[in-house]
Every structure is written in C-alpha cells, then in structure tokens.
Length: 461
Image (tube, rainbow, N blue to C red; front, side, top):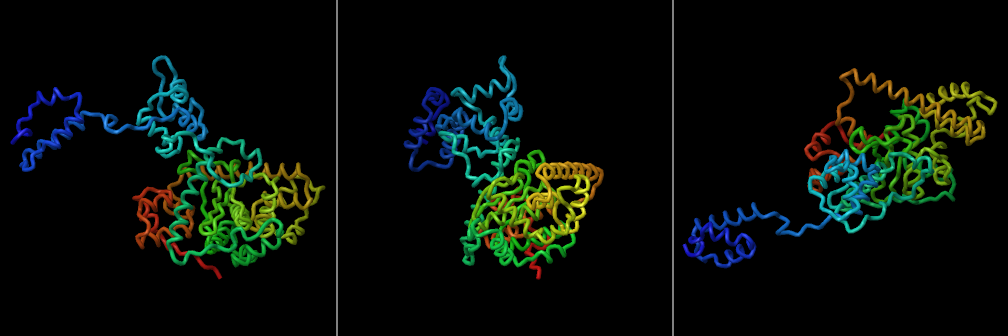
C-alpha cells in the first residue's frame, strides 16, 4: 500500500504544527494505482484535519472596522443602550452592555460571527456591508421634499431603510422589464415642469389615466374611489405599493415621517403610500406622487406643504379631487367659528370621498380660513382619526374575522407588481427566491401569494 498504508497516528501527531504542508505532500505522494481503501483513508485524514483546523487558518477573513459598526448602528436610529439590548450584548467584566458595544465601535477588535449576524438583523443591513472599508455615503432617496418638522421623527432611519428596499425592488423590476421585448419607456415621466402650470399638468394626467372626477365619485366610498384610481395609475405603467412598515407592526413608520414617495423612472416608476395614514387620504397622496412623476421629481413627501414642489403637487392633486367650483359651495368664511367649520367640512368631505384635512387645506389656500384655524382644524381631524383607528383596532382584537394575511399582502403590493412577478415566474425569468425579494415575503410563500384570486388589472370603462 506504500506510504499511505504505512501511515501511523504518531506521525500525524508529530506533523500537527504543519498540517497544510503535510496534506499537500500526501496529495503529491499519492500512488497512481491506489486502491479504494487508501482513497478512503486519504479522505478521512483530510476531513479530520478540516474538522480540527479552524477555517480562519485556511482562509484569512477580513476584519470589521469600528467605524462601520458605529455607522450601522446610528443609521438604524439606535442608541448604544438600545442596540446592546437588541443585539444581546450583556454586561460583563464590570462593563455594561452599552460600554462593551462602545468599545467595539471605538477600538480595533474582533466581533464574533453570531454577534455580527444579530447586528445585521437588528440594524437592517446586509452582512456584507459590515466588511466595507469605510461608511458609504447616504443612499439616494432623491430630493427630500419634507420640511424640518417631518424630519424630526424617530422614523427617519426606517424611511431610509424603506427607500433602500424599494429602490432595490425597482432595479429588479427594471431589469426584468428590459428583458421583455414589449417594454417601452413611459413618455409622461418627467414630461412636464412646474413652469407648465397646474392646469396643463392635471390635464395631461387625466388624459393618460383616462379618469375624470365623476367616475371617481361614482364609486361611492373612499376605498372604492382609491381602488379605481390605483387601477388606472397601474394600467398606465406605474407600480403603486401600500407600505407603512418594514415587515412588522414593530417597525411601523408614522405619517409624520412620510406620507408617500415617488421614484421616477421611465421604465419602472414606483409610488409608495404610507398605509398608516387615513384611507381617505390615500387618493390625494397617490395623485400627489403621480404629479411628482410627471415633473420627474423623485423624493419623499411629508405632511407640511411649505416647499414650492410640494405646494405644486398638492395643487395638482387637490384640483383633481376638489375643483374650485365645488369649494365655492361650502359656506365657510373667515368669520365662521372653528367648531362650525369642522362640522361643515366633515359633511362636505364625506360626500366627495376626500379627507377633511384636504378640504381644510383648500380653504386655507383659497383664503377662506386663516392659517391658525387651518392648523387647528388639521390637528383636530388627526386626533379624531387616531382615536377612531385605536378604537377599531381594539374591537378587532376581540374578533376572529378579518381578511387573511395573503389578501392584505396582495392589496398592499398591487396588481401591477403581482402580475409582473407571476408572468415572469411562469416564463422562468424569475426564481421563487428572486420573486420573494420583489414581493417582500419568504420564498415558500410566493406561490400561495400569487395563487389567490384574479391578478389582472381591472379595466374600468
């Protein structure tokens, strides 16, 4: 059996300090006509060596720099105390968990892989990002159209994470559509500007969507009106998603952080609406973000309207939902007291399938109420809505009914994205794993999600 057959355990122990050189010599000296037994013995020796030799002795792993750990934590919006608790870094050797985490962020040291995996999950970053040489520049979310009060919320890191997620989905959708021969750039994306004026931009939107105010109001409810509007927007080639968290209610993003955002792209334009907002506000937000796409203005929108672009897009959306001739029918003037104005606005808004806050905003823009009254009404309406939502959730806890997870998920994703994924999976372009990234579910849930109900975009005459 030659050298292999004469191998003894004592020889193995003597060469323990240079296993890699020994294994190479074994491979070089392997007899050309070795039988199956010597082959099995060779495999056993190599396997045992791999089992007893740490992987890091064979492959030099890169180190994680302290500045990257600090960047990942701060971009997640976590304090040292909160991060240590979530990651599971407990007090030890007389140091608190926060102090131990601070040491990792300020000193060169090894971070164990289990801790690094937990950090990746808690900080919502891919594991590979921890091996960067330096913190990356802030992700491109487009122009931030929110005013300062909108950006003073704890949801800012969540907004960043959501924009990153949607941009990654958009990139996949764009690549998939470019593979389809029928994919053509949408001519209306960035086709106009604020200089064109509210009227021409609104006229162009109406023409492309094929929708007028009478058809919208004929739906009878704010939910049905939004469904019609969304179907027309998606039929035009725009993906409309309802997302207000990062996968669970624990990561819910308040509307004070963002109401919606638009990612302008001639192949795969996306609009995201914060579904934490009142449903009566969804149609306005959708039209507002569509106006952003028409003028090619990618960015995040908030609840304050001081900026020129935000005012313009608000005026486009409100001119569609609430034209001036309708507003003239509302008997409110500067002399009207706040309580009476609130009652009249509530009745008026319900009949026209719009939010009360929109009506108050239009009255303020028309100089029919003062700015203090407008802000007070907006605050009152929001408080009432929050109370109503809390009461609804409390009632829902005591019942077993309600739509299933998959029905809710389909509604949030929209028919346009569901149809794209289903079509390309059937053609073999998308794998379940890749499709799961687009849909925001686990790969095993993709087929169940796509199998429920008709996914075709309804074409309403």
